[in-house]
Image (cartoon, rainbow, N blue to C red):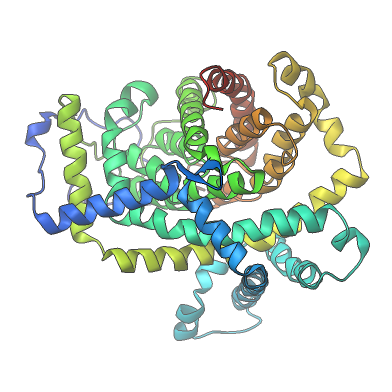
Length: 486
């Protein structure tokens, strides 16, 4: 992707990169067609797409294969799923504690132990450490079904444990299997490369940024951030481009949206949901890149600028190029079974990292909602707007969107009992918000401190994104209803 250059990591280099050379797509280095890697790419891509997007009939309803697989496992042994959830909670809390004690000098682990426990992966801030540990003390009584009534006798048990936790603990590891097939064996490159012709004219971004977006949508926002950081360090992006990619395109990933869709009860229309989500994300992104604060971020580099070649060609040319990139990645990648196993492991690790936070914050939010009017007060100014836009259950919808700005999973669970329109509307808005103060915001501030990304900037962008997403999503959802998709 990049030329052979020496990088200077400390100093910003002002100004734009030189204009890249215009080339025909015929000048691209297309991979030699060989049967084995071609079949490997096609099989991995078809499997991942089938599991997430192919509608099938099951027990009188239209749903997707991932939903059927989850239902099968849950019906096989609910106790096993609950035991696995509790084990994952314990793993997340214990490993985070070991990591934090090591980095605070309370204990010392040698290099072998650090590698064994993957200490860097589990390091976090003190508040999130507390969330993961507190979740253990919430999870044990919820698992046993015995404890104070506020914990085991109401919404915390039925929503936070049964509906949310038991769904997340299945869908992310299972989804990780098939997401990894897409991400590691060419699907990410195929989709990202195919999207290159729209990135520069619509979003004023290099075509290679399509890969970062695909990495976030197929993998996770953290994968997208990592890829963006990697390219930034090599002069492939300037500061404005990094800010745009992270705040406009590193939105919720396919697996996470699937998890929430399962919790909310809309997994059966998952392909429609994804279509609306991607459309809303692209529309809002095209607007935000042209207005402050994103339009005013300086176009500075921290390394020698390395512009990408700009290809010209027909739609057929780009499909051929994208297919070649997918096959190339599949040829260099792991076997399908190994990629699937690694996806399961990575999905389980990600679940262990977030599950405690989800349970603790969900419990707090549900208790606040049940015993105070704080969210009603915050959501009140938005209720008339929801009514004007024709959103059913306007108060629930407004409250869910407000809560989701803090924690995505918890906000969406508030619409479990709402109408189908409201569920779809809220899911699309919250999935496309991109900035969540329980996860993405602190990671951006930490990972891109040399831009810098500040919490006040991210707060403003969250407000702007939400203000744009609400009318855009309402229009899209009404359109989907009108043509019979919902």
